Length: 421
Ligand code: C2O
Ligand code: CU
Ligand code: CU
Image (tube, rainbow, N blue to C red; front, side):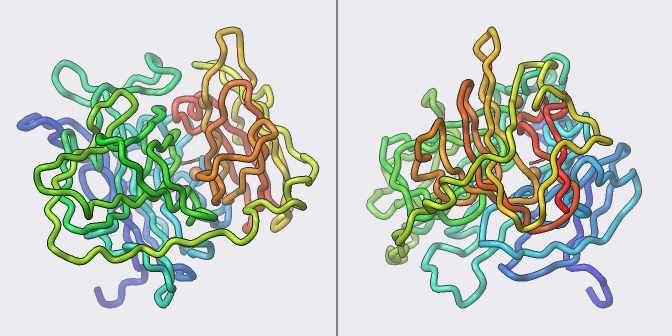
């Protein structure tokens, strides 16, 4: 459009979705009934985005994983009131990565995401990059948002935070908003950008034939070195990019992405269009992802995650929007030690997320993290009793939150604030 003073428009709105044939249920979406458009930025690019709230409740627009100033991060302080809009500038000043966006209103984040507010935000390798990775969006490069949903007896989305204080686990799996999805694969090597967009569920993904695949990226960009694996575990909000090689498959063979219980989450229909298998170019790391110097830096920030249900705290406190819990200087790297303190019941996994940064995992209980965690991260799974050390730098100033990404825990106050000065 001529004379338009923004590049993208993202509007949160009400809609209705037929998850089950012939039966609609109320949902939320960005620019549509459910989920949102994939926003694509090239590395180094900046875009003006008009954000509008057409819901009849406040919402925010949070760019999960994007290193933006606190002012436009869309955390709990970024509320847009019903009917209001704002134009913000997002700059992709970080490695190419698979990021996402979602609301972050304190107390209703979980419900708004559950109803459908989530979208992908991709930073593409800048043109002219030498990467040979599949990158034709929708052809050999496909985003997959895995979520689970709960429906009532009338097949209406059923959200109740009080009933599910440790996070809503649904018995119905949806991929990109669809029940019983099927994906037709036409290219021999496919790149999937996987988001665990569930409110709370941990997924372990495998292939139905037990074959291995290649993980090439974590939350914040390419891994130090690609990892060949037959299982991929992602906690809520974590992402991974994987390559699956279909080149040796015949039309009669079936293949699906399955979960830990062997349930098919995404079956593939393989119909290769005869294109030759381009060789995806792999790489090796020439130095450790975390240097010796980084690994031996002293811990300067301690985070204790504790509790279950409504009784969840970080460092013994629940979220207070008027309280700053930590301070860190812009551009200065510090070591955070995150400890998941078990309770009498044994405790549970908390996926710990920090806004405004892509961090490195230094260690888990003193040990080097798995190869697929040797890449930039913004969320990290912390098991009960585990101590995870992170190397954290904030490139931008402002107030940012850090929290458990089980969205009901976040709404229950398992969140703190850091001021970057
Ligand atoms: Cu996915 Cu506080 O964010
Ligand atoms: Cu975030
Ligand atoms: Cu939690």
